[in-house]
Amino acid sequence: MVVCVNHSETDTRVQTDSRVQTDSRVQTDSRVQAAAPKAVPDRPLPDTTVLTPLGLLTVLLGAALPMIDFFIVNVALPTIDRDLRAGPAVLEMVVAGYGVAYATLLVLGGRLGDMVGRRRLFLWGLAAFGLTSLACGVAPDAWTLVAARVAQGGASALLLPQVLATIQATTAGKRRAKALSLYGGTAGVSSAVGQVLGGLLVSADLAGSGWRAVFLVNVPIAAAAWLLASRAVPETRSPHPSRVDGPGTALLATALITLLLPLTEGRAAGWPLWSWLLLAVFPFAAGAFVVVERRAERVGRTPLVPPSMLRIRSVQSGLSMIVPFSVGFGGFMFVVAVALQSGLHYGPFAAGLSLAPLCATFFLASLAGPRLVRRFGRRVAIAGSLIQACGLIGLALTVRAGWPDVSVAGLAPSMAVLGIGQGMLLPVLMRIVLSELPVTQAGVGSGAMVTAQQSGVALGAATLGTLFLSLLPSSGARDALVAALLAQLAIVLVTTALAVRLPHTVR
Image 1 (cartoon, helix red, strand yellow):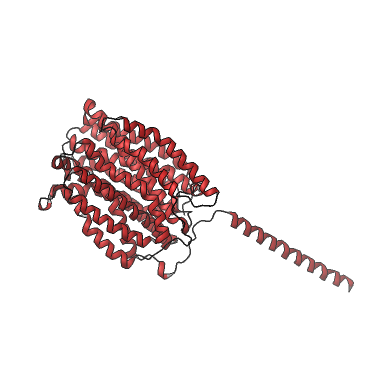
Image 2 (image 1 turned 120 degrees about the horizontal axis):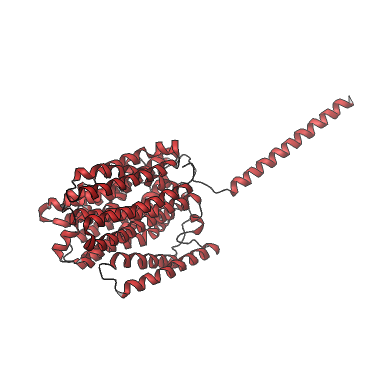
């Protein structure tokens, strides 16, 4: 009898101890989970905030407009020069004015969307983009065109960050992966489509509009997108919006302007004193921006670009590849547009058409991205980078051997290979950057990523463009183009090496 009682007491103590240990483990696990970085959960969303297929198509259309317009003027520049007697320095400003305003204001556009509503900013951006496109299309002289292009870049900066932020806030799981891949495909294809469309419109000379059609075509498209967005895109905003970081915004704008403006305008203007003074200011402005942002976060304010966000591994590793990729991509688009027209004497339409194989394969590769990523993880990005390198080598060999009789068909195989590599790489990188961001940082994260991307594109057009144009008088178009392609190949090899820092699996 005593033995039975002792066993019962022992069992009771064992059960009690096990419950205590279990509770302790649960509490410990919960503390560990709470301390771990929180990824964006793949949970069902309320019906009112789910992005429908029509809504996704609408925001992607809105995203395509600024990207197309970044490149659409490349093949129209010779015609603009003849019509407005602009000269090289002003032509550079037509390109640089848009790019610098665009890159400078992107993060601010993302923050404003978090505060006042992303659909609202998307609609405002579409309206402003349509109006500024109209101003570009009717510009009576070159400097009016430059001013309208700067305003158009600002409108684009309001519009574009809302696209990724809306996708991030209104999709989950496989739907988000597919939407991000489609966005990445849109980003790449739009860049090439811009030059194809620009060449077609300039060649068609609709109603005698010439180069003006490349801007006027935006007006009805922006109006249609506005009507669709007002009905099909759900409104989202950050649940805890913060004030605009005035000092951070001013310092980021100063840093980007002092870097991008002299690099894009300096060569055409003959490298005047102001270009060197701006470049000298850049490291101080960039350093001050870092110090101010760290201090703001340390004292509990919300900085324009939170340093803690940049310490997230997926953000850090993804951005470290997006920047060099964008430098190479932007330089390639600019150099090819100029080289084919000035060296091979292609017309605007033929120069644009040469990029059609790249458009097609880029889009197809981006569609295959989600399935490939689920199976192979980060190896998709590594493979894409290596395939891009093969495309550049093939293009350089084609140009070197076939000049000056290189046809559009002769360029097609290497262009197609390039498109496959880039289409496998860019959407995956964008997906990685956004994969661990909380929904509350969707706007600022999207703005920071697109700022890095567009700054890289502008920097690539400036640096590789300067290399090509500097070699052109002494070496000729063929050797200058080959040198620019080899410089891009070196950038691609650096990008490939950085791919080992990406997460093994991609959410």
